[in-house]
Image (tube, rainbow, N blue to C red; front, top):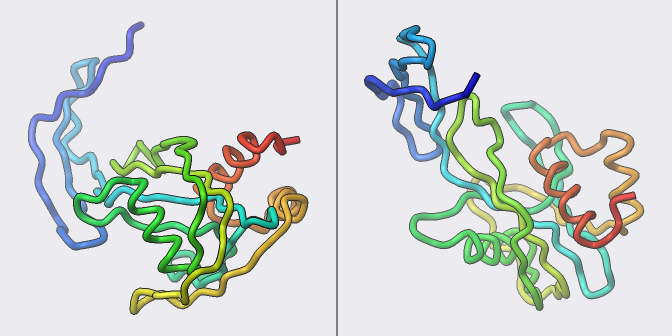
Amino acid sequence: MEIIKWKTISSKYLVKEKWATLRVDVVDLQNGVIKDDYYVLEYPNWVTAVAITQDNKIIMVRQYRHGGDIISLEIPGGVIDGEESPEEAIKREMLEETGYTFDSVELLASNYPNPATSNNISYTYLLKGGVKTHKQHLDEHEILVVEEYTIAEVKQLLKTNEIAQSIHCTALMYGLMALGELA
């Protein structure tokens, strides 16, 4: 059987906010079933960085995440603002969150965090040659600590499930693969 896209018959917005929008769609599935309550979360697109310093350390951040009620060890990243490109966004986020600038920026992957119920894309970049050039310039809701780890330490953190953010685990996998360090 061939899988085809569902046909959207109608959409109604239930919530429209800056950081999240919830809509309910009426959709016609390929088998003729009409589903009248398919909920979709619309989020802005995101960027994440596997960021390597000049001395070959991976930059990570530790911060509280209210949705999961956890203190989370993560890689830096954030929301793409307005019309900026993903590459511009990751450079901006790195400077704001960490104060680091980099010699090179390479797109590694673009993934949908949860295409079953949300529509956004997360872009993962590998940044190399990081040097601390500025102070952090955090958004009003951001409270985070910058930490540096060796590649071996990050691999151990992944093995022991100490990085809870699944999108960031995926990004680290792509980064380690690009660095020839996946094993």
